Length: 306
Image (cartoon, rainbow, N blue to C red; front, side):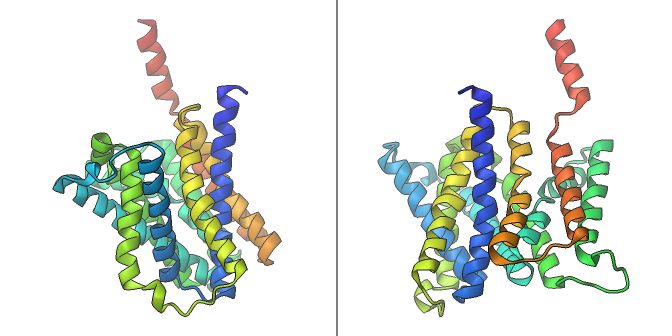
């Protein structure tokens, strides 16, 4: 198997795992009485334990050394807070809309990052990024209005939660760069998940939850932790070793499509033509942003030729 094919398959697997994770969350919230707080605390705590266990037992590493310094501990704790916010608002968006719509809204993350870089670091916005912003806004409008501008056909709470999840995701994408440079991706993600889950367990104690456990709920939870979180992150990070980040990003753009198809097929969620058009606009925005800038490619080629 070629390196390119391996990378594409790994990134595609990550998109599938993440897309079905939202569907699993919608299922157990709708059938077993789980709240967004329950899911965040259980998902992050379970994922953190699995990742830290793998790091200690399989990689034979001292799992406490990376966060021994105050600087690293606070950076990882802040990352965990960003993950908690992103996950909580994502599950709230699912609760008030559905897994497919929430996944579409969260794909505005790259635009949130672009906006932050523009306002905070005064980085100019390119024409391609402006086009992508227009596509994303058009897609969200299509989702909200369903083509009827006489009224709102959407949950305001669901829309706000989806966009807040995207903003929090943009934050935890940008925030831990220095910590990752010092201690690596694995410790940041593992400890961030664990610490975020630990805090949420005190806010939403699993032992006080009124959710009803069944084998279906247990299977859905196991999927959310093992494949929807641990497996998805591993596949995505591993894919970047075999293909460029642009290719991985293009494959991840399939996540909302998978969530929409799975929501419709497994949960009976109805998506009309306007919702489909909105989804296509938002996915196009992600695909365009994932493509390398031609000007940068030309500069790179000139530099190599000199």
